Image 1 (spheres, rainbow, N blue to C red):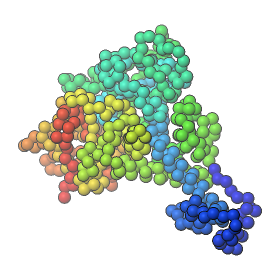
Image 2 (cartoon, one colour; image 1 turned 90 degrees about the horizontal axis):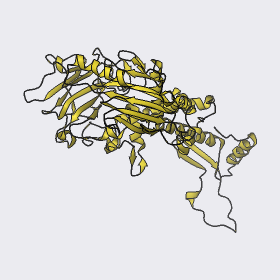
Image 3 (tube, one colour; image 1 turned 135 degrees about the vertical axis):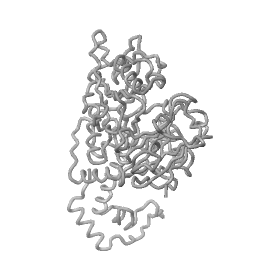
Image 4 (tube, helix red, strand yellow; image 1 turned 60 degrees about the horizontal axis):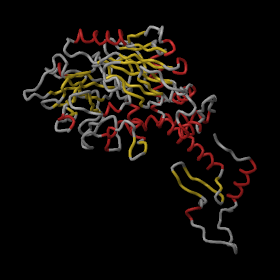
Length: 510
């Protein structure tokens, strides 16, 4: 990773510097004025230390400093820009660890998701069923989707492929999707919604909504039965005798799908690209990874110096991702402007993470560090349909939320949600549901015992212990830990969309 001088070069340059050879040379007959802007001075003070030159040739110490800096900066860029890929890698690894290790095996939260699952911003209100396709192993693969579902397919770079269900081509009526591998040639057979993939791995994300006309104790098993009895995944080559789709109940089980913040991030990135087409990332990303020793078909064997640099880069990359996530610099992430702490996951609701024809790198890092599922449908708000989200991690004075203190959030009268609204608490470390004594860290319009104020508003409290008389309006926090919230509006109405109604800020109760 670093070019070193020969001993002779080092001795010669050192002697030149020591003898004052950096002094102004005599003026020759054949000479023009050389602009200072195109030359290197004898010394330059920089953020990585003093850089030294002999007539533009860097000293050995300077070469070492510069190569250390280049390797570290390239590694930091690789970390931040590869967060989507490693997040997808960890989703696949986490699902495989609980048994969903083949295309026909689906992880399902039969009793809804609680805080035991380490999964980015999972909710407690809908039923998740997720899996992974292995197109390299299985070839073209069929997803036979039941009616009434909502889902999406994302590839191993976490790029959007297609929606499933209500927002997809089946329009919520169900149907057969055929996922084609990168090398597939020819026409797809008739009778399928055909989708081409750029990667061999494909994440299958689906969720079923609960029938709100039924009591919860009946709606949950009904949603599970709809998925278990009708969702099928199998290779096209076995359509005449497909393997039975297996379901693994994840409710209450430990499953880690969160990307790491240490050196192992780079090991996972290397492992990921080994199983994908050589060109799926493009030359820029390939070059970024190759510069730090990550290449398809080659071992990842950094020496002690490079491993130290990569460890440092992971720590810096982690800090960068968290700075971008909790204190974004761009207005596009703020729902009500920078005077409010309420944010949205997709900057300017752009799910392609683009701005003026270019990638918005901070927006992409913010989303993938804290959230999963990429689909244009996640950022299109239609009155009375689907869902929309608000996120908040700071109090009204823009300070991190302290689990040892008591806070209040007011939801003004007439919360504009046709179906229901819900507030879910998350851990600032894992970006997964906060693990407290409350199994489901969620409170909202469907919470039994929640009370309205006289004017129809709600006051929601966050504290280690419930304020007296407010037990039904309380979510538990943990001293010594921070936390943050997601507000989900199911069936958002026009006042939410046009912002004539907005939630309050989180206020510290003095």
